[in-house]
Amino acid sequence: MSPLLQVAVVGHTNTGKTSLLRTLSRDTDFGEVCDAPATTRHVEGTEILVDGGPVMALFDTPGLEDASGILDWLETGQQDRHAGAEALERFLQAPEASGRFEQESKVLRQLRSSDVGLYVIDAREPVLGKYRDELAVLGMCARPLIPVLNFVASQDNREPQWRETLANLGLHAVITFDSVVYDLQGELRLHEKLRSLLDAYREPLGRLMEARTREAQWLERSAAESVADMLLDIAACTLLVPREPAATEAGMEELQRLVRRREQDCVDALLSLYRFRASDYLATQIPLEDGQWGMDLFTTDALRHYGLRTSEGAAVGGAIGLAIDVMALGTTLGAGTAAGATAGALMGNGVGLGRRLGQRMRGQRELRVNDTTLRLLALRQRQLARALSRRGHGAEKALELNTPTDNTWRRGKLPAPVRKARLHPRWSRLNERADGVESKPRAQALEALTEQLLDEGSRV
Image 1 (spheres, one colour):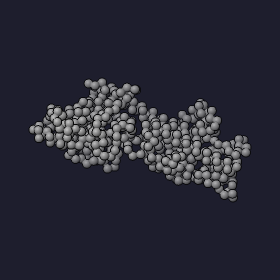
Image 2 (cartoon, one colour):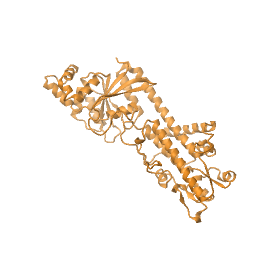
Image 3 (tube, helix red, strand yellow):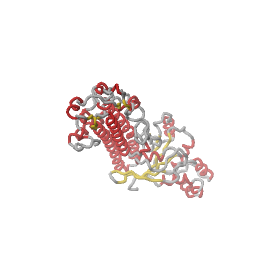
Image 4 (cartoon, helix red, strand yellow):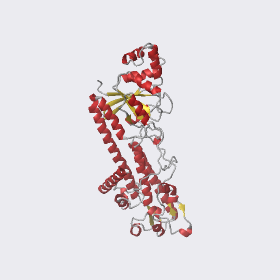
């Protein structure tokens, strides 16, 4: 017995074998994935580590394309096409194994040298005779074989038909594991099935299952903390500018830039956390200053898309005198509206404006992000974190987000830690004086907001 569990991933061409390995190994760069036959031409391997040590070796194999031809060859050679391991060994020694059937021979040799095989099936495909022939040939390798139904999240999958066919062939230990739509429980079921078949590897497989569970919990908490940290930074962000219209408009543009960049930092952190690349996320609804993203944070379209209203704080703004509407990307109001009916787009209505203006803003204006914008930021980043947690590393199509369905941040008061951050500009990395970023009160606020986000996530 090898000290390391050897798993051969086998199946017909273009069923998602490489995608499955990417998801199991959390490696978006493993192998080559494309919608074309025979993409994998050689056996490639990777290892899964637990606590720095390998517990499983996975081998990606070329796609089977002519298993029927192998069975015909066995019959032509007066061998029983279902004769088993001895007949297969004679086939592998024949010249045809290095010629016409070279690709199939690589698969069979790898399975014979492994402890177990995962037979990957594209559950969207009809059940055809060629797959039965593949199972017959693979069965000659005398190794345990677990059918894995891939792409079961697709609406047009044929899972019931496949299960019935596999049961008729005596294969009842069938696993559903989608390499595109990740499900922790699906992966745990796969490892549990391996444990039931391979008693000698129960201990390392048990450690792997425990590690995957811990990893999922850690990722969920780390993602919530990243979003919470962003919200505190932006809620506490404050810009003081002279009261002149030109200075106010320039200040608003600067505030928008800071907020966009801070949100992008959160996007980057989440992608890195879940081991995805920037190219894995086609965020048509998240802004980037270089123009890669489609919907800007500071537009009424963004608010409507997320079910938020633009009127919040307008009455307060009318009493202050700002002449710029940040939600309209800095459109200057006419001279007759210099009282600033839309100042609330930045100022919000819950931060003690009268006192702050009277005591702290002599000759200056204090610019900050309003509650509606904070709601929008929370909705978008929580939605991204959830989508990444459910995305398999074998997914080829870049992630796109639709309108979020939860209403947690659309109404009611903002969480207490966010409201508290309003009163502590030194909590924000976006401010010049940010000596409170590492303070105990901010750490407590971060922990409280993280816990609230986790609790909200458990209810979605």
